[in-house]
Length: 355
Image (cartoon, rainbow, N blue to C red; front, top):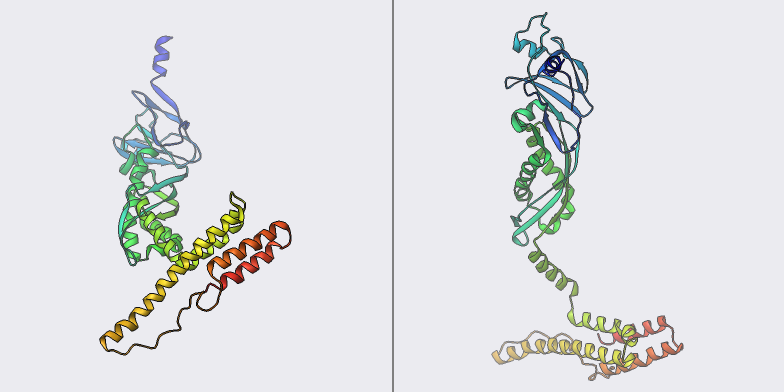
């Protein structure tokens, strides 16, 4: 009885693969010293493919289904082995199963910044990242170029190569387009499509189909982002004198709620307005330098623009006057005599007098 059990174990009559690890892409059926029984059952599940390999040479390929292994279902192996029509003996062959499931949400990115020439900033270093998905379509090509005779091959082993391939095309793509960095966000979708077109043939060379590719973000390294933020901030501020006056005037209601109340707000706005006046006076002094220099050299000066009058010179309210007035008006808001809207209108009218 023990001898018969031993003999039976030498033959395989059911060949199948139950995937217990979703990251396995190729798996070799364990043959050891066993032989495949003629007429054995081969089960290939959905999203799987099976390949018979005879002495290192790929023979028959099977898609999803259940097959009875005979000379009719193994035509290539039959040819390679020179089996006759009456062949019914057990045989040896390596059998590999391949997973054709779609691999979703695979992340890629530049491990190091890529240096490109930018039309506006000169040489800049860019980072990019995104996601992609793919699936196996050609098990014969995948076996000969990637997985080989390994007992199993996983996505982890493969995707390092795929990610580096994608990153390698980033510099080429950005260099070819010549799009400035500030315009790249608007062209991000087009960049993603162009990059997908470049790497699709690479995936096909591995026996894979690129199903989806997304370029999610293009960015600068942290130190360059800080420099760009500073540049953008200066452009947004524009007239520093008016910007300072606006900030201080807008802070009056908040300052009045804190310690010091409206008096503190008055001090703040007085300081802000004074700063704006100092800057205005500096600009006025600068306009007077040119006529003086022209008179010293004997060169007629151009007609001066309208003189910049300080509030005190033309009878207008001074910064301290406006601060005091706003303080009193805001106190009336607290007492319910003025509404907030009326106060805001009066504040706007008073600040316009500073212009």
